[in-house]
Image 1 (cartoon, helix red, strand yellow):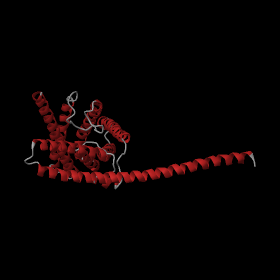
Image 2 (image 1 turned 90 degrees about the vertical axis):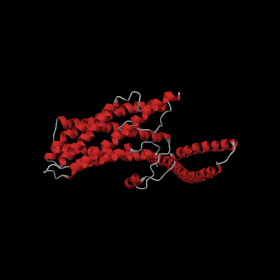
Image 3 (image 1 turned 120 degrees about the vertical axis):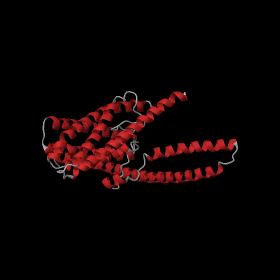
Image 4 (image 1 turned 180 degrees about the vertical axis):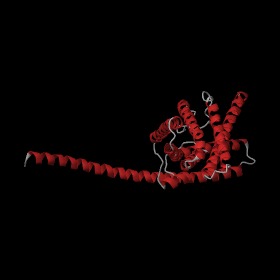
Length: 339
């Protein structure tokens, strides 16, 4: 047997041993995954059972709460407090267990499990979301700047609007996955992205013409300003959230948003004038489009639809921001009294 064949046989023997070890490792992995799957189902069913029994227990306690002695009342109060902490504990457990997707994720992704099963993977996905958001916002800022000051081609405007559609649609999907994994973004700041995605899609389909050219510079200036304000918000909010998480005052899965929230006060009030100016710019855009829709030569349906979207964005952003500011001012006035 030649030297070359001997080397080949030795190499093949080594590969065979490694392959046998790989097969055994994969068999153990499959076995462990089956065990994990069974444990997940057991945990989910146990949590559901516990929730039902706690609900029944609360009804039973309400019936027994009348005419109790002081000692019995204290006992019930102690059980009540423990029940409240138990509910929070269930939520923390469920954050690491598979759950059914919401309507939006079910329509987009189907019945795919999007739950991340470790804190490291959750934080990594959240950081990736924040990076994607900041990078796309900077890209939109530069593209809007170029379209507004240097070029005036319709196909470049279409690319900008396509980027906006891609940006907001991707945000809605990523935010839904983050909500499934414990992020507490909710309410208007979620719905806001659906409206913005629809608005960008309508702008993309608006045909070139006199009405489009009339509104073009106003829209590009608005997009430029919004991207600039969103860059400011991403930069300052991420720093604020980092400090608050280090102090244990915010949840690790909290996200930056395109608006003012209850945790933003010290150091971030300078953003409020920028936000309110952007809100009223949305109102101005809506009113301009409604006036444009009343012109005799206006035949594009996109004019009225865009005006309606801008009006919804203004009302949602303005009233949500006012409500948050009012809540914060009210809380600040109550603190000295409680002291």
